[in-house]
Picture 1 (cartoon, rainbow, N blue to C red):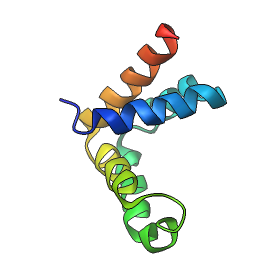
Picture 2 (cartoon, helix red, strand yellow):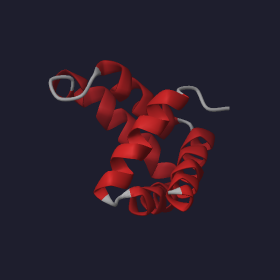
Picture 3 (cartoon, rainbow, N blue to C red):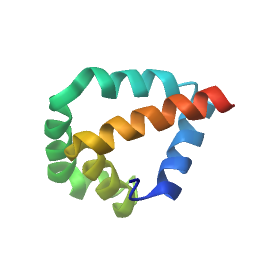
Length: 85
């Protein structure tokens, strides 16, 4: 189950406009269990990153990276969004 579908659609739209949907999806799939480390980096960097990215989006990204199932679903979502556009 997707926790924040509206944020996922927003990200997919931005990534698509930059031509990065497929690249980000493949990157997430290749990282596998290392995504948990990425989540920890986001948590540690929130004070600095919060100046550039809304807190809710940082929390959502960390949640996705912490949960292997959410990471897999987001990568699939990005692939589907690319195919549909």
